[in-house]
Image (tube, rainbow, N blue to C red; front, side):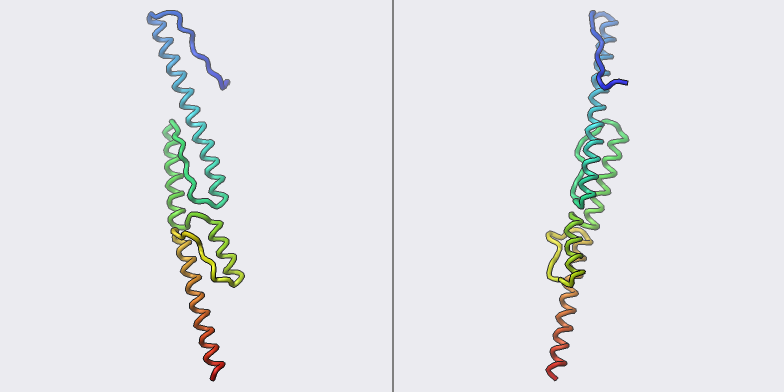
Length: 145
């Protein structure tokens, strides 16, 4: 097995020369296709690393030549679209807000909330603030009686 493929030296323009040229074209096309596929796989691995870090906006943009890799790219990007719509853009931002809530700080919110979990997190924080205010008002009213 080798990574470097050399083409056939074409010495004539007869039928054998034409066949040699066609073989050379196929060798170069195959090499280019493999390079495209390799680049797409590398980018896919990088995209997964970005998503593992909490960023759900990452997408695979490289275009492989292999039809199965094209399908895999499309399926992974659709999965990321669904996660971004249902969860949000940044899982770290959601975690930051939940950590604030655990510390009983309900004044923080998810910035630029678009995903369902992000929006629900912000709504939850607002509802808790309302409930705490009502409880405080009720306690103050009882204390004044």
